[in-house]
Image (tube, rainbow, N blue to C red; front, top):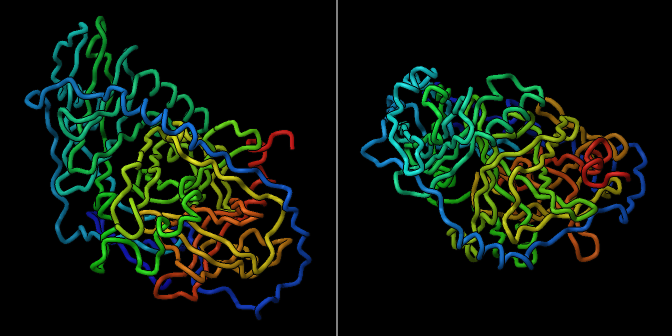
Length: 498
């Protein structure tokens, strides 16, 4: 492919070419003359078969005010009482802060590291120095440092916690903390077991990260509980070789994605679509990654947070549980490169409802409600779009602030094993798209392709991969057809009884 970049880590160079992670083809599909299609008679699209968007903007002012007035959670343990576990630095020659920018490739920004000092429950119990709380319980904290990391996510193995216990995570003492209860952890583990995940995956909770080389875990137990009931360990962590923000800083001097990308905030007519789109951060046993996804409405406008992305980003419940989403992750004004003050991050993970390589689709339900002002995108499922249809992409290329692309459906394709071949409307499960403005990059994976009906845009597919780029403007990208995914399974959630 034309634009693969790699990350170096302690385990060496990791190639992020599309073929290695379910991405797009190794080059352009065999071209057809303009307007010509392969044999096969496409069904006449039924434009009436669609779900309308649902806009929460009217309620946003009240909800944002309530959120601003709510008390922030903070840690209880003083800095002097926090034990510290410090890992060895990664070799300097092994940490090259560059990331893949291949369209359709998840951007890898973190490496998995073992934590021998907290690998077992016994080792962790030895680290915890308990102090009394004002409520009559006990509290202890351990800070985990991975030198030079741009962020640290802890892989916390929770075997047992006393009823009423709480885990807190923060970047530094006195700063805002993220809190999760023993009940929430137990519910999450039960869901993972019911989904067929292994006991190791079910017990593992991936903490938030705070954009620094350390993350602190604090354990509070209520009055009457014993420290011996705290059966947790931290056998591994994800060391972000670049911070999420540094993932934007590439080999050129511009701290953004490729120069041909178009800032969503420079196009007022597509800002609403940006309110549906979230940057994704998720963690696997191999490391941490960036993709893009879209909030979808259902036929009842129930405000259920259904979320669409790519199968090659998330295809197991264990990975879905690690999901964090960044909303309103766009610039504060046209081409400033500065993040909007409306940016909100959700850390609650998601439930995987459906995933299929046939259209490279992953359909989730977020565990947290989207922030006020988010737009639940409408979707079109009335058959294949016509060749020549104008389409819009909104995405986070290379993890950057939101960008947009304008293009045209060139033909239908089938894609598998990193390659795509020409097909027809009856058999092709992907659209092949060429861009007239903008492009896509690594991290754009899973982002939606929007199609306009009347004055409204509807999701019609999600990004699989391709070779379009700023240096290859004639390249092509491939999107899984939403209408195929919808009829295969997704309709049972978005439009039950249809």
